[in-house]
Amino acid sequence: MSGNALKILVLLLIFLGEFFVIYAEIRASNTYSLPGQSFGRVFLAMFPVFLVGGALLMSGYILGYRAFQNIWIVTAISITSVLVVEPLLAFTIFQQVPTRGAWLGLGFGTAGLLSALLL
View 1 (tube, rainbow, N blue to C red):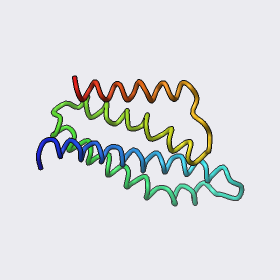
View 2: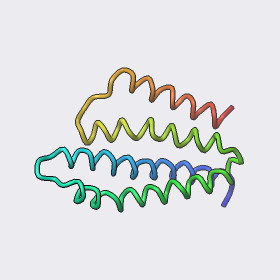
View 3: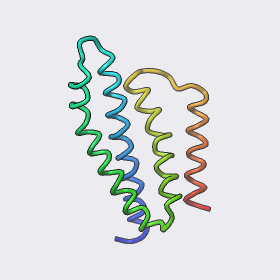
View 4: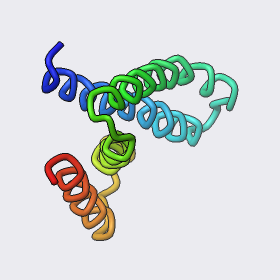
């Protein structure tokens, strides 16, 4: 696999991994807030989704260090993916509009990712 293709794969793995992990966390908290839901049932329903996300993240980190030869770039990708994915999922699942601070965090996180990758 070429260097650029591997870097794109790493971005996809980390973003998808964060998506699955954050989805499991947010969906579980939303579901548990409904009447009649038990903690154990909600936990067991979302745990497999969380495991898939964890496997994707681990793969992204393993391949990411090889592709970038710099763990800080991989960390910046992961942190930025959280800043992008979490507000989107929170809005989608909870129907809550992000605050101004969340939008600023998204902007700064994106700027940080771009600076880590391009500078």
